[in-house]
Length: 129
Image 1: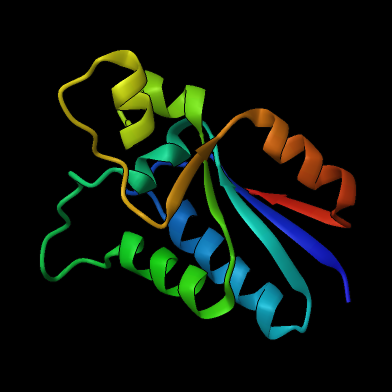
Image 2: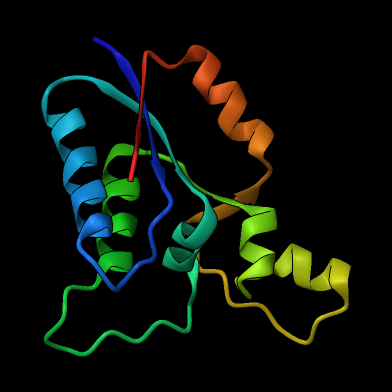
């Protein structure tokens, strides 16, 4: 059994890369491997934005990531610097920066690139989308 990390750098909507990342995550798990974390970086942090409103007939990628994380106890981690640059703000960062609100949804958490680097050291494979 190999340990995998999936890094998502694509935006939540706009192309099929986000859906492919989700499908890859499921395939890793279904193949009996361990998916230790999913790290959202660059435009990938848009997946955590609580203000995304897909149409009712569109695939809701946020709900699918949330379900995957809950079912398999996989952390969904956003790069805090990339998130702040793109207006995705968690409650803690909003308080630290003196902002009037926050829009990062649970179960997404914020962390630095060190979290990704530490994970890469113990992973057998990293898949980037």
